[in-house]
Length: 205
Image (tube, rainbow, N blue to C red; front, side, top):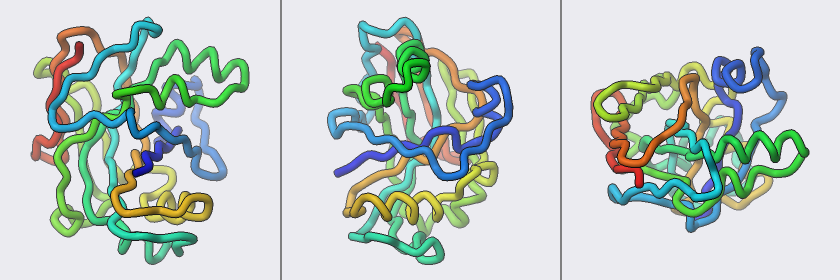
């Protein structure tokens, strides 16, 4: 099982991070270790080595069967389920790595950093590029997203990643986060929604 992340896939989030609107020519892809996966409502533990650990709420898609060099027009056939997830990021560490030109593995792929909710069969959600999702922390909405705002749609992401990696059943793609990221604190209670369906719920420790 492989976990892929997509960086800078919403324009306003790019502005949030970089101070300007910035569009990459190709998707920015990174990976997370399998030990990054947190599911079934288990808590997320803030790593001791970061002073700022940010939530990044995202649509997550799951691959349903084997595929390589998948044409974009057929990519939807390889997705069997979706959910809401959080790509936790050690933001202070990421800033240091970026400034040094180093990869993001240790600030993005650390243990527990890929939180996912309950999976929904893809046929139940309709158009993947017209889905609304949001995150509440302690009962207050802190981030909202609409997949129509993605720079690279889900089909492009699946096709692009499959050029470099054989996609296998159970692989998942975190498709990027919209504007509104921010830090979590110990004892925060997080709930993630796809439309009005609560799919994700856990505590921060």
